[in-house]
View 1 (tube, rainbow, N blue to C red):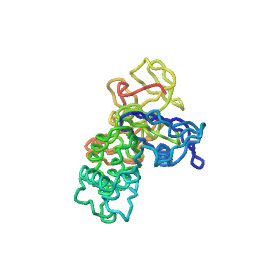
View 2 (view 1 turned 90 degrees about the horizontal axis):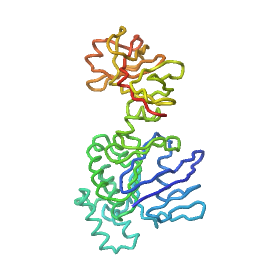
View 3 (view 1 turned 90 degrees about the vertical axis):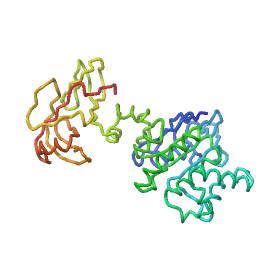
View 4 (view 1 turned 60 degrees about the vertical axis):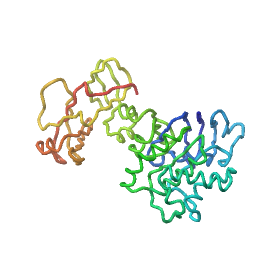
Amino acid sequence: MTLVAAGTARVGTLTVQVDLTVGDEIVAVLGPNGAGKTTLLRTLAGLHPLATGRITLDDAVLDDAADGIFVRPADRSVGMVFQDHVLFPFLDARENVAFGLRSRGVGRREARRRADDWLARVGLADRATARPDTLSGGQAQRVALARALAVEPRLLCLDEPLAALDAQARVAIRREVRRHLASAGGARVLVTHDPVDAAVLADRVVVLEAGRVVQTGTMAEIALRPRSAYVADLVGRNLYRGVAADGRVTLPGGATLLVADRSVAGDVHVAIHPRSVGLHREPPGGSPRNHLTGTVTDVDGLGDRVRIRIEGPVPIVAEITTAAAAELGLAPGHAAIASVKATEVTVYPA
């Protein structure tokens, strides 16, 4: 079971490059606001037509701009879960779940039986007769998911499925949603701006920025080798771009970084984990290191650790223990030296 989408979709001044292949897996489309994530999802679901290109699902053409083919959403084997759930307010939970089945020709009794089965699967058997306005955000989200899954779609699209939940409910329901998605089978595509949702819910992540796919892979792969400032900030890495030669990377402006990997040459990305950065008030000794001088601009507590941003010729963020931060006594405006071993610098082709 494979979804293949390639082409462009246009909304206002934004052109979204639709470039996605999804097999029997869960793929998260991750990106900042305005990147085109929802447009991409709506295009897959048939709620927005392609401007160019085509979309196929198991070799069946759903959208082909050149040939004038466009299959209506109701005629696609697609389930859609919207960000705000969009439950019918005049129908109870059972009838909301049964609606998609009824619209596909399933008889009332059988549709209700299947709806009850799905409500039981998502833990809402006792809320079958409840109207949407009496459901909590988490319950409404599960009803919407059950409604989408009940029709056994070959493609399931979810737009920010956990966005409407408060923080406590989000944590509790995230893994539950993962379990239901894992058991559903088929191509499953969800849009999110939350890296935790992407990491927990998806098998693979596609990063979309300004309408273009900039990176794809597992969350761990993306975190190890970010390819844009957005991704680096998302996964908490320092990211630079420069030119590598003989174990040294020259950055714009002339500053250099020592790297242990001497096999990479030419245009490269350089990633440094903040926990690999040591901070000092005086120049440190020891093994060969990168020494980066600058001024502390931000000090942010993160539980038992502290993130400290240093601005200088090579801006860098360090993450150290609260005890180390207290011993250093660093505060905004203080001079500091960041040190990074060459072995802790990840370098890869740009």
